Image 1 (cartoon, rainbow, N blue to C red):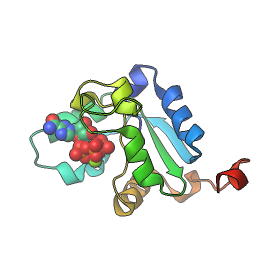
Image 2 (cartoon, helix red, strand yellow; image 1 turned 60 degrees about the horizontal axis):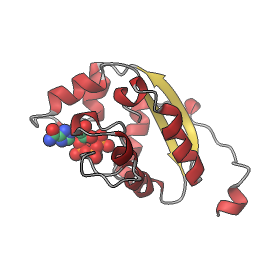
Image 3 (cartoon, rainbow, N blue to C red; image 1 turned 30 degrees about the horizontal axis):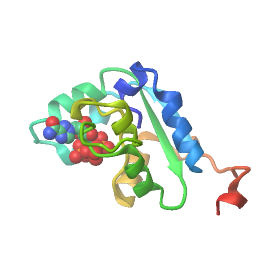
Amino acid sequence: MIKPDGVQRGLVGRIIQRIEEKGFKIVAMRLSVMDKERAEKHYAEHAGKPFYGDLVEFITSGPSVQMVVEGKGVISAIRKMNGATNPAEAAPGTIRGDFGIETGRNVIHGSDSPESAAREIALHFSDSEIFEYKRIDEPWLY
Ligand code: RTP
Ligand code: MG
C-alpha cells in the first residue's frame, strides 16, 4: 500500500515503477480513502499500542493506493525494497530510505508474512478484482 503521504507527495508513479522494474506483477490495484473500520482491521496487530490511534488517523486521512503484487519471494523482497520502518534508518536505495524521514510518514506498507498478506488481500479486495495475466517478460524473469 502506498500510504496517504506517498500519494499526496506525488510518489505513486515512482513507487509502482520500482515494483514493475523488479519484475513483480501488479494483479490488483485501487486508489481509495480507507475508512476507520477497515484501517483498524488492517493494523489490528498494533491495537492498543501508543501509536495505534495516530496510525489509523493518518492512514484514513486521504487516498492511499492498495495493491496486490505477485512474484517469487515477493513478500520479503518488497519488505527489503520498502526499507526499515523508520525512514531515518532505512538504507539509501530503499523506498523509505530515499523518500522519507519520519516513522509516522514512511510512505509505504508491505505485508510481513504469507498469513498477513492473505488476510490483508481479503480485507481490501474481492476475488473478481484480482487478475490473472502473463507479463511479456515472464520467460526471461523465471
Ligand atoms: P507497515 O506495517 O506500515 O508496512 O510498517 P512496518 O511493518 O515496517 O512497521 P510496523 O511495526 O508494522 O508498524 C506499522 C506502522 O506503524 C507506524 N509506527 N509508528 N513507534 C512509532 O511511533 C511507530 N511504530 C510504528 C509506522 O507508520 C509503521 O509503518
Ligand atoms: Mg507492519
